[in-house]
Image 1 (cartoon, one colour):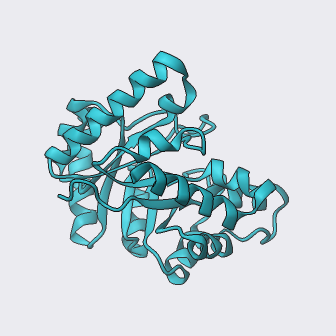
Image 2 (image 1 turned 90 degrees about the vertical axis):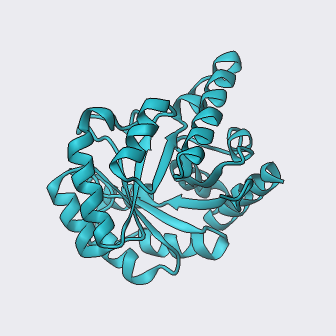
Image 3 (image 1 turned 60 degrees about the vertical axis):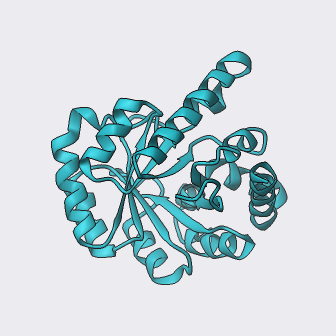
Length: 245
């Protein structure tokens, strides 16, 4: 693998759909927002189809796959329903995330070890359809080794705790993410990271040489309210490039 690959920016457009759903109707359109993000420099688009359809809907996934000019990263729970939807849609990648109905947002990484048999079957089915298989996990060596064992192509390291802490605790979390990225690379998996990243936190993570992609959503959609989505994406792209340089 490249020692310092180009760092891609994946933009998650879930919360464009959240705003749309607050009033019903079709505005704002998450697919239109995805195209704006791509024009501004996004390398890919992420969308999480939750079981309760609280933001992204089935038709959004279908339209995204048919419309966008960059890879689609389909975040999903490891359920039969979501596997069937992924197989019907054929996104570039399917990122398996833990999901609880009562959570506001994803609260941590997937426990791959405890669900290894189920996730092996899922990875086999998705991989046979040409879909890259990604696991959203904590930067834990045992979990990363389990991801490799089930046949995952990609791991996405959870950065939420890093973003939510400060001082020595944040520094400790950053070191954990660095170690996890190195382990993933040594195991032969492409390593991504995401959750909670913003302008003030992205730099140290973007500087990790084994990372290939950052997925950022809520912060960028929030920033878009005051500075516009193109400006928010362009600034994030610039901050990532500066850190990687």
